[in-house]
Length: 273
Image (cartoon, rainbow, N blue to C red; front, side, top):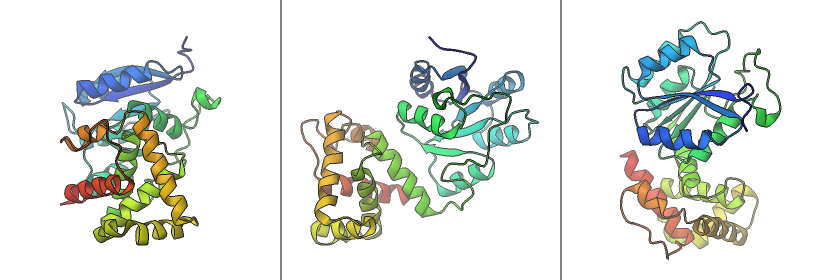
């Protein structure tokens, strides 16, 4: 049973009812989370903020009422006793949108499509005083100096690519804690910079990744293959079809290392156009 007094108070704002429901359903199962309101309208959300204590705001930038940037500006102008943390969850992936959001006080910028469990984990990582970490001090304002990777640094095209690749790998079920996750992310970035590498994956790409991480080409190949196997065993790789909007993956087919790297790299290069 939840201890409502200790749970983080979360406000969800998103124009997509299905996205709100998906996230709300996951957070409702967590003992350290309490969704105080789930809204599509930014004006209604501001009314909640004026009348209810809120620890974390999860918001899209595409909203009813006002747009997301006007909503963020309204939040910034409030006189907070305890300022809430802000996580933006949106499909807007242009670097200028990310940079503008961070300048307006956003603590973490996460791209759609998303895994609700991953969003929950980001909230836990973001907020330093969750019950999960055994350190609730509700009278103390959160330490805003404890920022996530995007904050307090210029948001470049490279940083946008890093985040997008990370979110895609999370989405298709590759665990972040295994080495193959890092190797895949680096391999995708390298192929985006030099597409010809995908045709020289064994001779050049694996050795380049290995050199950066102090590994061997063989270990890189095995780690990436293991990461794909883990995602495939969870039946999450078929989410690639949802991610890219076309039937590119069949459940009975496990993609090779090169196929997955090429698929994600090619798709991201198209999105950049």
